[in-house]
Image 1 (tube, rainbow, N blue to C red):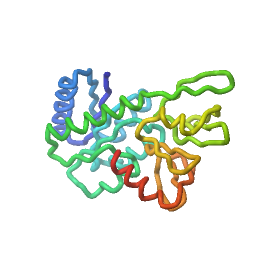
Image 2 (cartoon, rainbow, N blue to C red):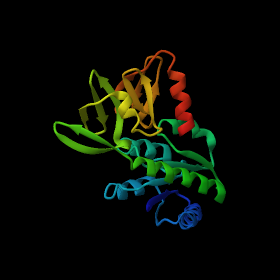
Image 3 (spheres, rainbow, N blue to C red):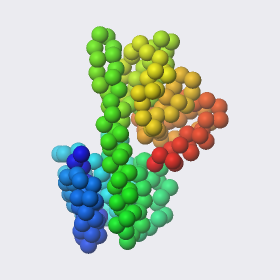
Image 4 (cartoon, rainbow, N blue to C red):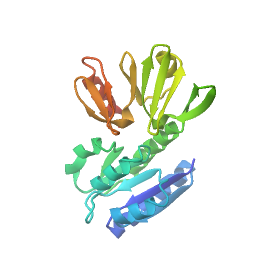
Length: 233
């Protein structure tokens, strides 16, 4: 599989160093890594507006007018699949990574071994994101990418598949659909399965997703969901 990797850092020496490591990783992994370098968040967004197909973003935090956290928040508004890795000399922002579902934090200077491990994880996540669920509705069949599904709801003999762009209602059981999902899906209540990639906030009775939707959860489930998110991300 080929990967498009963006490196955004206002230090030219750091950009070149990380780009060299990323190229080594791609060669060792036997894949074609297309690597693009950006000196600022604004520069990245200008190019991203034309081609929003980057798979992995290696992102500095302390940069100019728009820092890496602000860039990641803006990016996450429309892209839940891109693997964001913060590379920084300052660990103070680590708590904010939860909000943008950052894959990992790497502290400068970055070691070859640690960057390779994180890129391996990113590649694994991207491969899982390619998996699709066969959805049959109104005599039509469509393959829906798992990474686009926000949550699934049981309604008697039907399930409703909620996605970023709409919803599908098909005759099936929730348990049957669950068998077709990946590890990012969590059964949070008898009638609901939520995609943990989209969870923005957890409280005692529900989770709030990045699109503002609220999904009910069972009593005592909040801590389990939190632990599972920490394990996966």
